[in-house]
Length: 279
Image (cartoon, rainbow, N blue to C red; front, side):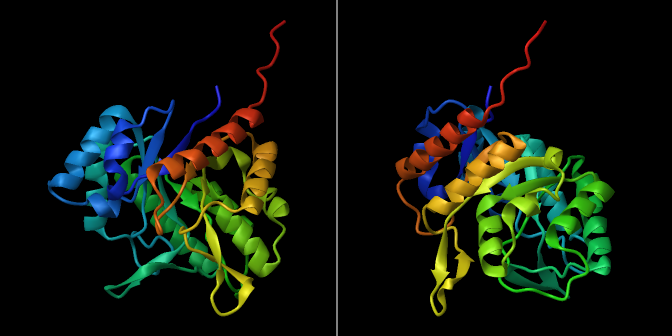
């Protein structure tokens, strides 16, 4: 059986999500939006979890930063993992905090040996605290640094050192390839395929000032045709993986997300590798 496609869950869509009946439909949420002691959001999520699988996709642990993950934040993560038993948990190759200042963004990590050491240390802390493997998402990149590793090597070494998995954001890979001149298929050849536990698909837009010369990861548009094409190419190389339609801005009706989810599911079904013959 092929892996299933899911949809990011927003409060505006709770009722429609609760009533959805698509086979295998699962939902992903940002745990930071549910780190409360009670209230309507947890009750809504309880109701969703009774009918659908959940994954938790963190945006606030700053694993790529200088400092260790905040223990209180990790404790809140742990309560949600215990309560909802997510099928997967994930975070980003990014940083978002420094010296008790928190930034509402996922900021780029320089691909240096020192940054790799810190990143792996922080992944180890997260995985030990939660008792789960974490999937790490590749970022959308907009400029080059004087790196000591390329991104694929950095991620592959993180997997080797920590036992983490990878969340392959195909939209981010497409954006980075466009902005920096990276060959996305060559990039894919340098990461361990068996570590890829989930795929994300999202929308991007042209930069308002530069136009098509710079693509921005907005999660505020439909999945673009070239991203669908790259998705099919990725599946041909690694085989099907659970795949999420990710939308965080300019939310369309829930039914429009289900249309994109159905497209992703068709790709997954076509990419399913045949079972070996038994002699």
